[in-house]
Image (tube, rainbow, N blue to C red; front, top):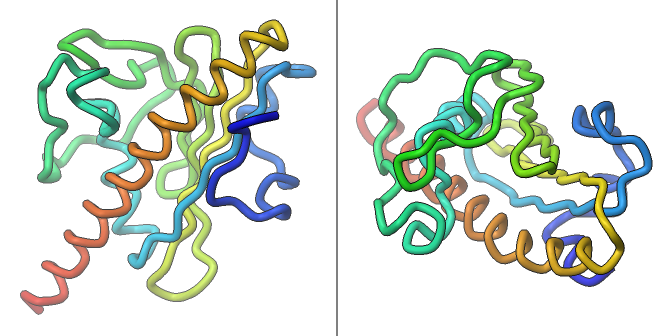
Length: 172
């Protein structure tokens, strides 16, 4: 399907993701991924902070409010909590979490898993899989739209984690 993959390898699309447990035979399956030049422990707090803001195109999905550019020290996410906040409204909910490793949520009928894979020391693969039951035509539109927004989100999280990691190393 158009827009179903960005930045992922065949092995990353073949692996099992926690969101797979929530949707049987999804019409939409989309995978996204980025390489982050920081250890998973430096990426996780930024991923967990998605609860405060979407971190994609703030002018579209956050009514122009800028997603935080500093970590605020949130407690670990818990199942049942709101997944994100956009435009001042809490949206979705967390359905599975393994702190430091994965965060799975549901929003607007879609289930998505963010997974951190540390392939090497001081680097992390930040992977996202989205699954949903929908019509084939809607899946095509959703896949392309998600590609634009999820790509920006992952690149923003990558940039923030890498910057935070560099700043932390500079102060040591």
